[in-house]
Length: 465
Image 1 (tube, rainbow, N blue to C red):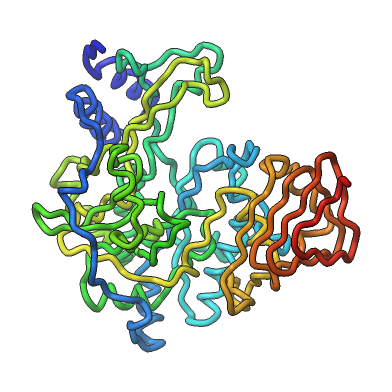
Image 2: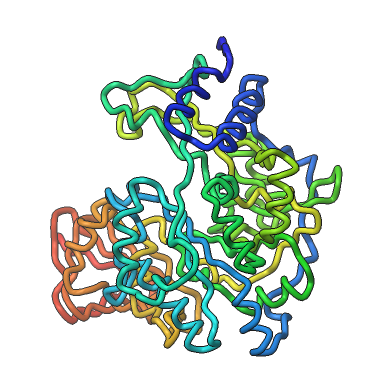
């Protein structure tokens, strides 16, 4: 590999109108990459996180909650298109349940806070160019949001994909837009400053930003956490939950031996021979929910002192320029994770929260569970469980991978899962109305088949024999 320098990439970003601070971050990462950075965190450099505060132990009054909510803004990461589920528009425009999109539920959760406490944090989306129009159109249904003092969104930055052999910006005339990529969620801090919103929030007396993914409806703006942060003067808090075998490949929080600071380690930061240690849930017990609380004064001070470069650990993502074509040129996307900012703030903490605050939808397996009768929306539009046992495990055939195909196979709604412990479908099956699954259920079909209305499914059900 012959790396000439980042000049051509910087020129391309400048011509595109990318903010100078985002360009400075890109240059810093580019030079790390050219110098041979691997973006890894060896096991020998960290210690497991053992003691941490817990949300359940926080005690605050309604007055403290009300006052705290007036000092918080809610930022939802909303740049995702849901391409892994066959979507071309914003993932948050997908119906989550009860005919409501993810953005509908998010808006209603905030309105519910206002109805209960008389105080509603402003909602701000970090959009991409591809998600902006459709997302803002959904929010027009809520006139309360239009009255907030802050804009409803800002745009994430973009950077060129790099040719894996030369580290030059890749050329792809078939679709020039595929020459660009987002810089990862770690971009939220620079994008917030570049948009002017960071200063607007501080001028409005907002002390903290609560940042989370738009597809995680469990990530509500909890006034207890906000009040606790303000009382303790904590600059940065990462919500973590107990790690199970299902979370073994997700990022975990640990302690860096050299300085005792908290760090976030993602799977992409682990060499292959240490994956077993990384996935050891007994050793590393706390996974990152990607729900973060960021002190805005402290963030502004850090960005100012470092000229916009927070110095978050680099993540090197190797792909092809066209994700749908494995034969297209191999490229590198330089990324960072927003949770890694936990190491940038002096005095940051990890806060243990219940798993109910982590309900992401990455696949149609999780979408089926969210839409099922295992959950319901309470009076404040929070997603709450209706069962007192472990949630059923869902595994759907590839025929259900894309949302349009998924919906076509559940035209009358998804089966009842309240009495179910696991639900798997192997084959192409269309389900009728009022179907229920009990215990461990596997539905098999070697050719397209149907489950009749009102069917009770138990055990292994073979439909093609």
